[in-house]
Length: 124
Image 1 (cartoon, rainbow, N blue to C red):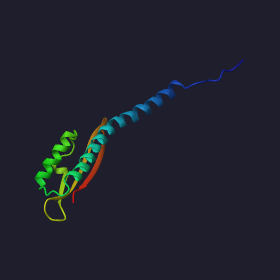
Image 2: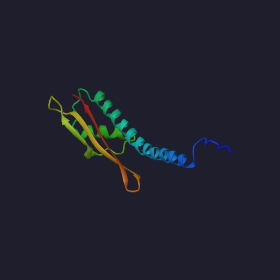
Image 3: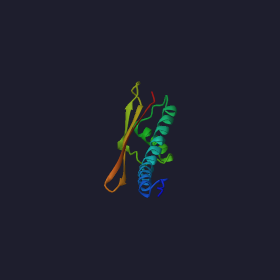
Image 4: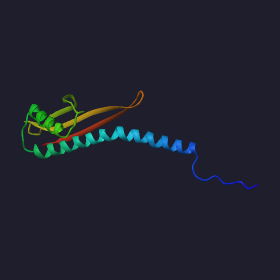
């Protein structure tokens, strides 16, 4: 009697492999929008550095300018309380802008993914 060797993957092995693929796919689907939004924030902050050089905007003017830029980049997670403005070296106008914010997205059941992001722009 000749025994045949088993070839290929078993059904259990395929299910385990598929479950890993689905699990990491779900995590990637939750993380990608968070990081795309952060990329938008960093792009806006770099453009703020370039355009606000040698200008003496007040905090309110700088916030309005920043908010318009964030809106045009489809950034919705950054609110006014996440942004801090610091005076410039000359003492007039905004010299540095710091954005610190967190994004919390549901993953599965009662498990959430939290992303903490930080970006700065020095306009002095």
